[in-house]
Length: 210
Ligand code: ADP
Ligand code: ADP
Image 1 (cartoon, helix red, strand yellow):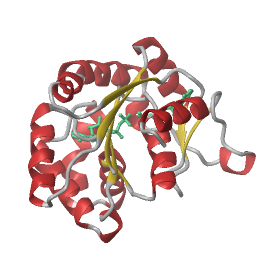
Image 2 (cartoon, helix red, strand yellow):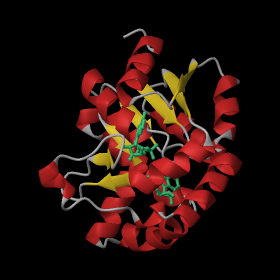
Image 3 (tube, protein in one colour):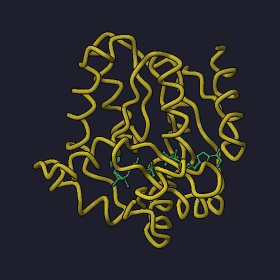
């Protein structure tokens, strides 16, 4: 199963993607997580990506495609993958088509998590991450356990101003992918991302007939 999760920053792609990946037994390929790891480790990739990420801009495609190629070549991804945060623009979508063709694999579908911008801004302000495990929480909607709550951190790009810019980038560059995929014969499932986390998961699974 090769599945793309599409949606604005904060729509719940990471939260749903982790649960789905576990259920379906395939890895989640989250380019944002991979990039944040590279920034933390201070690698060449991290150094080149950091400025774009802090500004809420997309990192150049050539830095992203190698990551995806590598992740897909991993043994764990033999049965497929859940793409979270990739592709981010039409160029990346075309490249993904090419990469999958080379690997003789194909996409099975696209899930779009629909969430309005005003909800997004509230979500991002409450988003906290466990820096040890990468697990994502929300102070109100999905609070961390007490022992974890003391060390969760806020992402630097989750400040309101940067979130608003990332939303503009999403509407300009990423949301056209919905139409891009609707013009193919791939199934594109729209799910109401404002429902509680478990209900969103259930709707995704039923749209995939699972
Ligand atoms: P969110 O989960 O809030 O949508 P991500 O973790 O996916 O955010 O991405 C955080 C940042 O990492 C983006 O603002 C961008 O700078 C960079 N990034 C992640 N994935 C990509 C990608 N596929 N192409 C370009 N930049 C990316
Ligand atoms: P994305 O990967 O699309 O940027 P996340 O999965 O990181 O989104 O979710 C953004 C924030 O919203 C997190 O703090 C997460 O705990 C919270 N969240 C995710 N899904 C829901 C939901 N259905 N209802 C309320 N809060 C949610």
